[in-house]
Image (cartoon, rainbow, N blue to C red; front, side, top):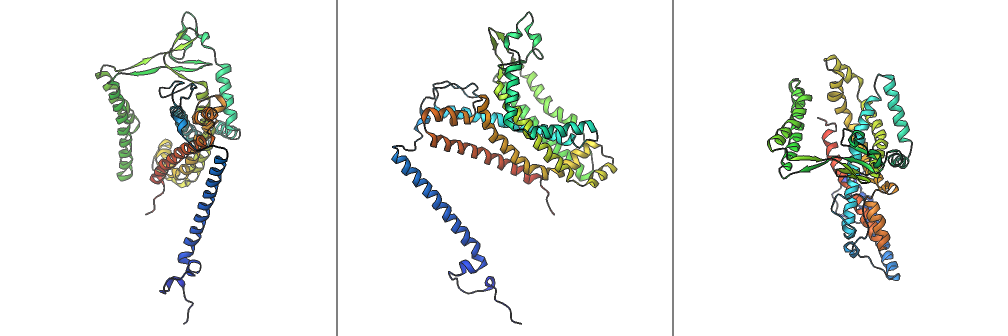
Length: 406
């Protein structure tokens, strides 16, 4: 029986018409055309920018990064003065951005997972309270929450002078933490050279605890042996570091904040702007994460819960061993977007005076130098690098927890 000839099965020599008529080459042809069009567009924009800069007597240069910045930064994780360079000011702003982003991501995850699980609670009051939290916080812009929390920190919190008296420590939380309108003062750890050994032991203990929990889970899945996890994890994490701390002669001490003059000295000052940005991003994004957690849990068949309960597992173990591992494949992908949103929303710090990357490089440095194009390009590059790094790390984790077919 005669059949139509299939271009994909033909063995004829290559012809230019095959770039459009042959399905083997057609997609590559259109992709190449699209690539050429995009390249031409960027070339036109670049040439137009260069022509406009020449007409204005300007040129793209990053020499200004080596000039003194001439401004102070209220929080610097690196040694910094007003005579430091604009490059160092940008690095300080970058570290401030990373600090508030990491803190907000961790806190938002804890809040979101807790609220998402509790929203499915059989307790009517708890479930409705979590539902009210989700609806309230995710439907109000994050900038408003930043301003509200910042106002509470600056207008409602007492001034340092309120801690004066015969016993000022009595007004401080645990005698070491002071909540004031200038920020929160907390103890500062002071490490001797041997103190880093204790820190290294503590980090190694955390890794050991993770490995132990993996071993316990493998034993449970392999032969049904249920190893204890709570107290062994706590023992692995804290006991080695505590023993090292005592043996090495207590190389880590705390510097407590003390009231001197009109303000506290010593300790670490967590600025009100940092706390406002941190908690506003956390509670706002946590409401969205809670809905993702709830959706992920509901995506697991109810029969899984019933089967686990029939085997005698307690509700907490059912959630940790059966429900959440399966729900992660639904939870993690949108979680990546929420982490990216936290990082980008941290640029709202300028509203409360927190000197992040946008406030330093994209704010004062831009205004002082007039190098708008250079600073904006650097700003875009920094945020792009941070976002791609977060996406890469979370995609690695997503590949580890996603459903694997046989």
